[in-house]
Amino acid sequence: MPAAQTPLLDLDYTVDQSDWFAVKLLIDEIERDINERRRALLFRMAVWFSAVRVFRNVEARRMLGDDPTNRDRLYHRGILAFLKGAGEMLIVELRRHAEIDTRQIGVSHADFEACVEDLRLSEAEWYSDVTPARRNQILSDVFGPATE
Image 1 (cartoon, rainbow, N blue to C red):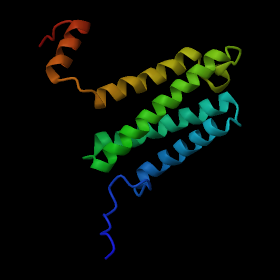
Image 2: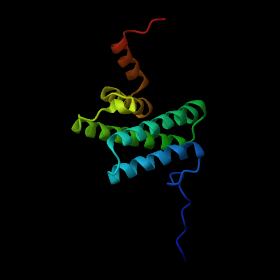
Image 3: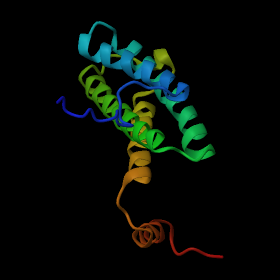
């Protein structure tokens, strides 16, 4: 008797929601670029910025504007982590090639690093284990006590 097949999990690789499809296409492009190392650093940075921009638009619609599904949350977390990691690798390459003028694509090294830092903060904001009490304490320490 054949073993019972388990139903496909919600984590199946294929993206069936059109909102995440565009982001996934850009992510696939970045992965190919990183793996093949064929494209210039500035081009890869420009593609990465495009992926972040599309991701933020989808994030605003699916995660903030709607009631996100479990699939939305899983893709959001995974793509956010990927974009952050790819951005960090691009920073490593930028530091190794200081002669590259990133202003050719309209961004300074500092601005690029700030964008990656923004992804780091977003990941911590969405997925950290900080309790509400600890979060309030941190905000109070940084910005002073809340006033009403």
